[in-house]
Image 1 (cartoon, rainbow, N blue to C red):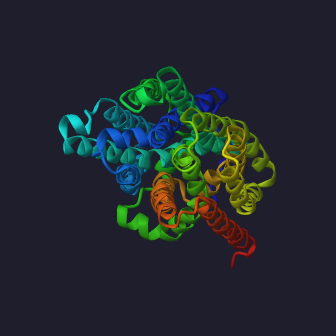
Image 2 (image 1 turned 60 degrees about the vertical axis):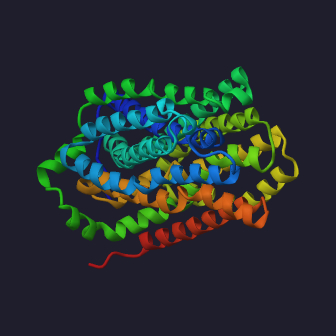
Length: 428
């Protein structure tokens, strides 16, 4: 376990939190708006004629961003562990901004044909690569600036920032839908959402550039050399597997929440503006609950809130979706999204701390980033495509509830195993 005795001064801590969370807001915002505008994107960048095929191609493009995340985590994580968290975070923010602007400016399939699809995929690959390097450095920046009394609180800001990205995406989507209407939004007005994301980039980049390096990294740099790529993987392979397992419920619940817009419009035939209100409620819930869970975890440890979140999701996921399918109204949608966001917040506010304690300082950014990226790629990035395909084949709209239940129960079993491992005495 890596527990610093004391953190940096309060002013630096505040700046570190802002620097870390702004980039995380941009990362999740970009993926959120790609998900909530999936129908519009499918009509813009893929051949028309088969709605299901176009939507599946869009989700495959969405998943492509997750496939390259492990590469970004390894490359940019090694960079962060060698030269520092600050430089790595500044670089990832530039890459994310470039990846965000591509969907906003790329011509449509009707204009330039297959080249539009290729450009869009390239943008998602670039965004996924940068996001893979963002998370490890992000969590390292937060935990290494915290004191021993507020480490869980600081780590909870990572998921709180994701809630901020969800909230911003929901607000922007709702405003565009209300101002321009569904028909005009499905044309080119959805692109405005990607331009909004670009505002975050320059501000976050400047804050990250002027932030000092974390003291814990500086101490580690003097004492320990960074392992080579192969040495690092070999020495930390078991830790990476544990990190991937921690990601199961975290990433599935996140992607299910992001999928609500497509699910509610396509399967339940709800108005698109209503689904954006659902995203807003989800974002507000995460913003409110994550810091509270973080403060609680600093008192009782991270495992109890995580277990509670996974257990609640395991019990409630299927009944919640059954209720939504039976009564597809806005109040029901808001209730379901808030309930799922509560379970996600309980789990995900604590997960970054658990993952950061698994890895030594010299491998923390790489280890967290790789575990997160592989977990998201395996269990999260394919969620929209898997759920859409299963519903298409079976005709059962409740499969999404079973999918989330399975992920929650797997993670609950993992938490029990981790707690038992901690209770075992260490051999002399």
